[in-house]
Image (cartoon, rainbow, N blue to C red; front, side):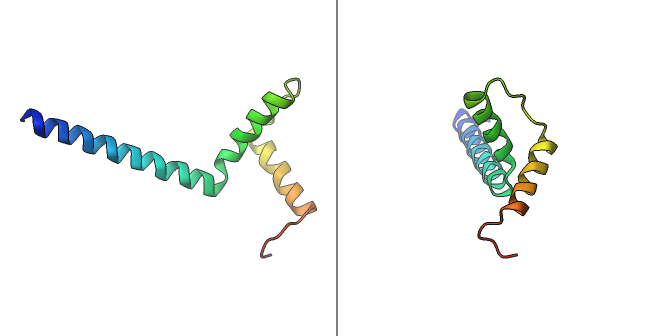
Length: 75
């Protein structure tokens, strides 16, 4: 393989990988998967003495709060 083709192939792989990471980041954001990480970072910063909830505890509490205090939503 020529060096020029090798460089082009490497750039293409980097672009595909960058695009894939962007898609994964977007889907996680839409699905709310990053919310748990954001909440844990908040707890570590603002409430370092409190234990971190498990993922299932976080979602259970979040859904209970949404049901108890409904905001603008369709249903």
